[in-house]
Amino acid sequence: MLTPGRAGTPPPLHRIALACTGLLLAVMPVACANNPEPTPVDTASKEPTSESPTVTKTPSASPSPSAAAGSVEEQLEAATVAFYAAVTKAYATLDPAPIEAVIVPHSRAGGFYLNDIATVRKKGHRFSDVPEYTVDNFEVEPQDADPSHEIVTFKLLADFSEEVDEKGRSVEEFPAGSANGRIEFMKEGDTWLVLSQRFEE
Image (tube, rainbow, N blue to C red; front, side):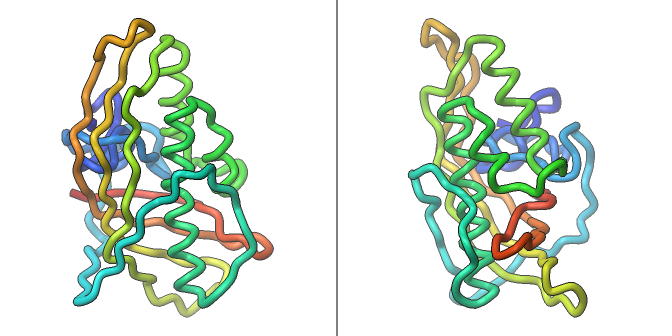
């Protein structure tokens, strides 16, 4: 579900990937962190390679920020999973609150998602199928500076999704797919919040 005007990224990132990468690939809801508008992204972020990748399915329950527990890597992986669970919940209900709860206040981390949800709701449309996301090949990039600022890379996979109109007629389908993602986190108190996000094919 990646189309220039609608934003997306490789299959799993539905509408947001395109906005973040400028790619014309089909995928499901995921928001472009620093740029709600479709713009090309550099290819600086690496694609993580791990001999034993961790695959984490996003929970179906409504996510909310929680106090950090475990190692920093465990905290960040949990925060990443919670973010995409929030995206799924927001698209399922067309309510931006789940996303707003897991991003840095006043940042543009969820800008694309929030705008997209508002547009779909305004048209009276909804999603008959809302994909769940799976976080794979999760890694934390080495940081020597601020311990409250971390960057993670991963592969995001998403299920099939479909937007329908008020009568349940198909408007657009978004095939299942995957994309390489990068999230910049900022720690506020004991909670890791998303500051920015981007994807690459």
